[in-house]
Image (tube, rainbow, N blue to C red; front, top):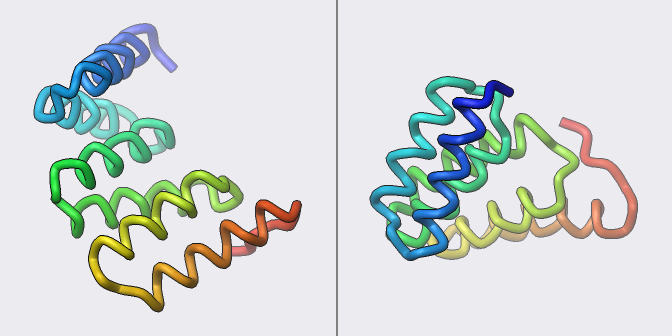
Length: 110
């Protein structure tokens, strides 16, 4: 990862820590535009959007996260939370099931 991208991501995290969600979201969007494979930026963008009530877009980011790293426990847990907020309980349970598999040392095959 380039230093510029890392600095952009660090700045986004700083805004998030201060509760400046609009600024954080804008910077996370820049990160994923610069590097569409940047898992941490997709995950952080999804969580920031969820905090802003942008649930559908957050789910899209969550899906991108689990696509990039299908064996990441936190990504599946977060996606489950996003689906719960959307009221989509079957998908939330499915994502939770994948998180459970990973928590027990298994792997998710996608």
